Amino acid sequence: MSVKRQNIFLVLIGLTIGVSLSIGQGVFAEREAPATVRGLPVDELRTFTDVFGRIKNDYVEDVEDSELLENAIRGMLSGLDPHSSYLDREQFKELQVGTTGEFGGLGIEVGMEDGFVKVIAPIDDTPAQRAGVKAGDLIIRLDDTPVKGLTLNDAVKIMRGKPGSVLKLTIVREGVEKPLKIEIKRDVIKVKSVKKRMLEDGFGYVRISQFQSKTADNMVTAIEALKKQAGGSLRGMVLDLRNNPGGVLNGAVAVSDAFLKKGLIVYTEGRVNDSRLRFNATPDDILDSSPLIVLVNQGSASASEIVSGALQDHSRAIIVGTQTFGKGSVQTILPLSNGTAVKLTTARYFTPSGRSIQAEGIKPDIELEQVNISAVERTFDPIKEADLSGHLANGNGKKDGAGDSKEAKKKESLAQTDYQLYEALNLLRGLAIQREHMQ
Image (cartoon, rainbow, N blue to C red; front, side):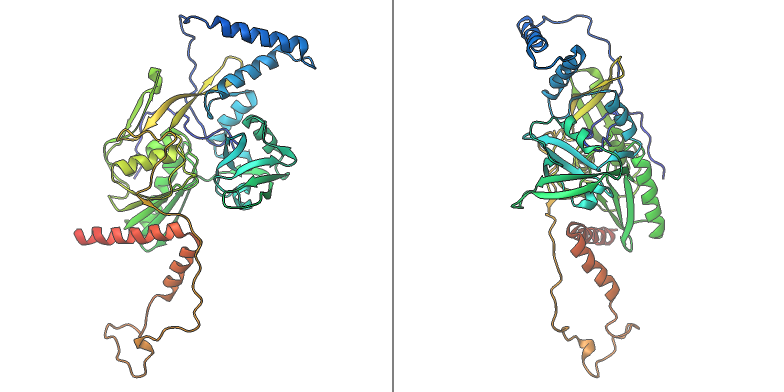
């Protein structure tokens, strides 16, 4: 099956301001200035010029006019919301390169909260994830530099560096009494957005770590490979979107479309016509209506929430995990004539039923925390019929007590390493059995 194609804009919806600058291929739109300007705020402009003059005359050091004006632009945008920002030439270039899936940094998506850098999600197979950084961590110090008082861009510049160099993060984590100190070696981050494996016979697992322009194609290829491995079709599948911070809108739409046969996927609403978009599913379901479980957590944001919301509203999947991040706004990249750009929030997006995810998130159908469990140590194995002397053969042509101990150990291991996935697989088995009995 090929990915269903749609003519859609690449609208930036990911959490791009961060170390990785990994998300964000957007509508690079150049708009003409409005023909007419509403009444200018004369008093406010007079205040601005007064402050500008005071700085030029009285500040302890001489400051270039261009620097002052650029800082004013940055402040004007950062004061709107956490996701609007000014991108200088270097940042704009990195943003464009980020969607190719290879970039330098630590491998985390971040935002600001109460003056500190907050980790939205560590990216799979990156230095940050391997060092133990978790979604929700607050970074309070970068090496010896306090984060309080820095802008997000300032913090990001410190976190960037030469591959192989080491950065020490001081982190405050919920539930941990003392701040944690974590050393991370910077590296070139190569993101593979789609991973797959077979959980057990007939049940597949696909992990999407972030949404890039080719994510849907890669996902379809992965599912087709799993179907072939399973003998032609899957009894069910788990789609893992945990700690997926988002990405490009077309990726989220195409991934949702792969599982939906019809209906609205997502729509956006803003002030200008370009920001009012609607995306609908096209026929065919790559899983042929087999059960689907979607795993989410507090690190699932933006594009992940679009997919979760669409599949939930159409009752196509059961959402399992914890409440998602709640980023329901759309950012558009507006290039400027001097080679810089503005990343501006231009719309909110809504699920098919009209739900806004902004600051709310997607509530799972089954709420399930990630917990650590361990096997109970047995002093002796319980006695079974097969252990009794002179017991009757079972008559089924199988050896006595012939259970799949290897499979049992595999399930036990999954429960210990990833409890949420273990429970999702249990639920998937039940749904598959119910579906097969009804056919």
